[in-house]
Image (cartoon, rainbow, N blue to C red; front, side, top):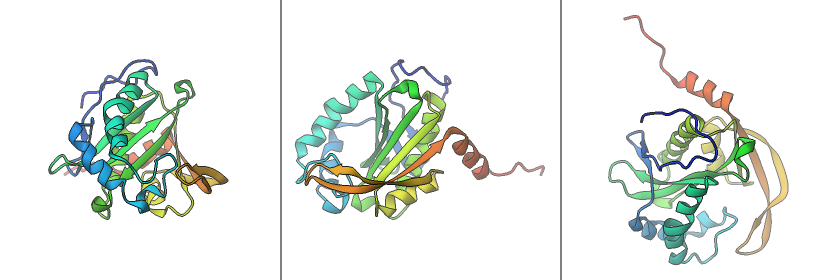
Length: 208
């Protein structure tokens, strides 16, 4: 991917295609709606999310793909990607970030993986791809992460990508589909944290 360097918060961005050969981040397509709905009809997935209805209707997936995501990309307030299996380019989840004010240079990350794609590190890879793009192309100094206390799978993905757990906010999350409140873990990743993590993961140069 050719880099044009960091852009301003107000410049519209095209949706890039990012891959590491195992997972691919790309723009959404109409056929992604069916597996998205199937994945979000799993209560063990939706119970960790605050804003999704339950039972989850297919119309929500269609609206997300056709209207919500394109509008947020255009506005520069959120950048969501389809996560696909690189082998067949089929939807397996979502990853993205949003901000209330780009001038703060702080974004919040979110991600969902369908149940049948878990257990092989796909979301850890997807988050890594997203973060590499974020720090290269967006005005960003910090990425926030939050999840309901007990969501160890999400925490594991965040920590594998350099996020540091910073505390717990008591009853900070309201799950709207049943109006219950939940404690929230919070973590953060700084630009310098990401740079240090990437430096550690790069192989040492050889004189041979």
